Amino acid sequence: MSSELATPSPAIPASKIAALRLALVPGVGPLTRKKLLQRFGSPEAVLLAAPSDLRAVERVGPKVCRAIATARSDIDVDGELELCRQNEIEILDESDVGYPASLGEIPDPPGVLFVRGKLQPSDAMAIGIVGSRHATHYGLAQAERLAGSLARAGLTVVSGLARGIDAAAHRGALAAGGRTIAVLASGVLNIYPPEHIELADEVTAHGAVISESPPKFGPLAGMFPQRNRIISGLSLGVIVVEASTRSGALITARHAMEQGREVFAVPGPVTSRMSHGCHRLIRDGAKLVETVDDVLEELGPLAVAAPASDDGREIHHPGELALNELERQVLDAIPSEATTVDAVISASGLTAPQVLATLSVLEMRRLVRRLSGNSVLRL
Image 1: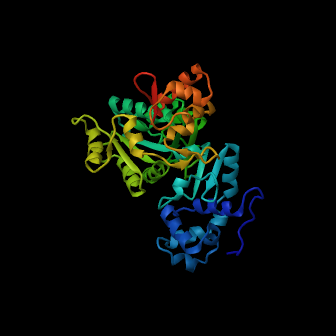
Image 2 (image 1 turned 135 degrees about the horizontal axis):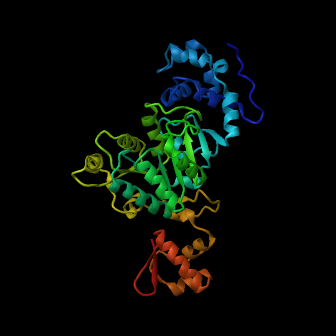
Image 3 (image 1 turned 120 degrees about the vertical axis):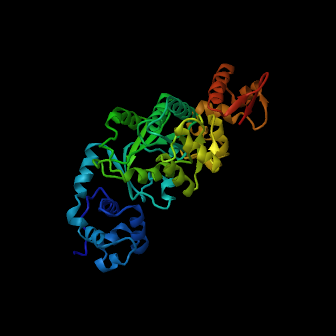
């Protein structure tokens, strides 16, 4: 084996070429990849490693060792890059600024992400909604209602584009004019289930469809549990809406717990088997969810600099990330204690009609509460 890697395209760093090549090696899953990187330090070093050194790494058997050794000749990286270019698919590896920071914190982050659409800094404020593919009318209604309310509050809704609860969550966020991210077990050019191709296009236009699998990769059964860790990894917390005791949604909830994310569950009829998984989660300590306020209260004050701005302003509620300049001006004029609307008008320097109309928007986003009389309170 040559001691040099193939010459990369001048527009793409060699490190990114190597990260993509390693991600495409058969048998190198996220855990094996992590072991290799811990041993060799970088994807380039892994691909240049001697077979004897590779075999010394836990989880690397003879078959995987051969696949790594022949990766340069067997894996058509240029073909994948051209396919992505033609279809406007962005490739993100862990060194990219756009790679979600929350994913880099989980024990087994994806080596690369293939992205249709656009990930934004504000997507750091995201919530996962998952549940049964065989959802009842009740479950579908709850998923759509919660997704819409969370989207209006400024959170990005993350789910898996599956039938049932996932699709209802995406549609709820889209109907509310919010952002949503779909995480696939297949490639982003091989939408599964196929009847959700149009939904995937809508998600792409108002968020992103992402996968760690190559764009045309088919939906293999083993990839569905593996992609669930990405749903939870992208999210501040995960809401489970309807799940039987053997539902894949419970795998996502387990990933969330292991990753230190919040877990929420929507209760349902005790006579419905689709409620059993949610009720078990609640018994085990998951937060019971009836309204969007149950979720927002549990997430608590988010004292972080707004990812979407450069002014270092402290954020106390995810809904603040979605404010325009006028809405921010009114919110900044409201102190933490109750104050009169007249005082807000004076402090903001805006007209009374502007302030009154904006207060209605802020109240809908659960950033302020109108009190009796002429008073308002910032939440």
